[in-house]
Image 1 (cartoon, rainbow, N blue to C red):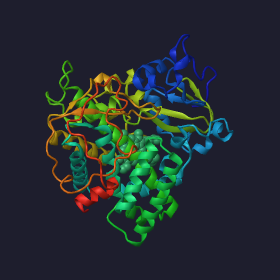
Image 2: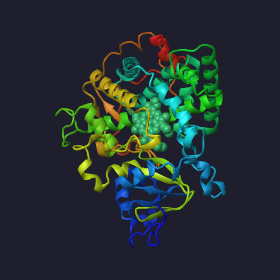
Image 3: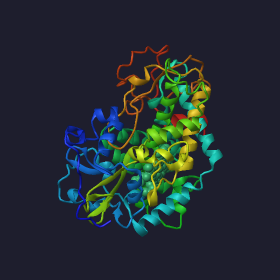
Image 4: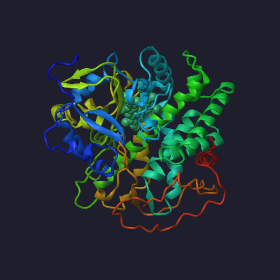
Length: 469
Ligand code: HEM
């Protein structure tokens, strides 16, 4: 992998869109049709120059084989972003929106070698203690509770009222959060994902997780926080907090997008003129598989820093510059045609690969599967309230994420949550207007407008009121 004399960083054909203004991965054009960008990127070879945000340059690996060479070669490609030369030299805007996803933190994602092994072992061995029957039961109860909040309306935004809240509440359960801490955790994570008052939200997140660690040290439970504390790695409080933040960050956002993207795929098949996906028996498993191949929730990430100039399939990757893997482009690499879907279902890179491969593939799949089956079985006549082509995608270089997923269905009586328990206060960070940003969406009037909440409770304590877990 030493650079060869003929190797060149980038040799794009003249007129290539990647050499005009379209190198950026952050605008609405990219969000609307990322695969057009990946095709253009392929004209450079295995890797292309990109701009992740204004003033943040990087290289994107778009070829499947090259992606594996980077992901599986930790001796040449480090994950510790303190190696990032441009950041060290002050050439990266400190208020850049991509920094929270790239800046060094002492957790699994940003560490290498022995330190990574130590942290990862604590995380994987704690996750391995999850019981899958209990996990599906927890998902079902949270799903029931969330569905109860909108089932009498006949309309909902399945992204913001279901796919987004379900993993957030589930992590409260998995971490063993008491009501108040869970409410603050949900509120602060929601605000961080939505980019709302991020500094304050981050301070609140840190504070409540430190509180949680201190409670669990005194009173351990059957939960991930306690298992991490008990792990022989002997993590300190700060380290515990950092792994918990990472688990929520790494788990909640992709889970939301896996559920949202798969629901869109299944519901789009119900629209006139579309190939019938659900009616003709598209299984939820197949929808999840399709999303992991074609719309992976983490589209471009796994930032590596070459430890020296390295030649990769004819392209030189400069030392200490960010090199990201496009999981989405690698999956659609034309060179991979034979291995796609039919021949090798698991050949996609949606879970990553190498030492940082997702340690939560099984529970993450179970969560999405259970959540999707639950909503389809509870609300059998769900249909999209907008044309599938009208749903809008959230801009940003890292994710493949819907903005909203408006649906209609026949309203029915709620079962448990509305029977005597107030729904939580609906702040903008928690429950955006279902039809906001759904471009070209015809306005939909809810058949029953939701009652304003009388008492301001958070989502987690309201859930606990219902289920007394
Ligand atoms: C639902 C869909 C999910 C997808 C598509 C997904 C995908 C991924 C990918 C691509 C990576 C590699 C990132 C990299 O190399 O930088 C990763 C890492 C990771 N994921 Fe997941 N993930 C999902 C859910 C979860 C959940 C639910 C959890 C936690 C319970 C989780 C925990 C982690 C952790 C801890 C890492 C870092 C591992 C390391 O750096 O050693 N993921 N995930």
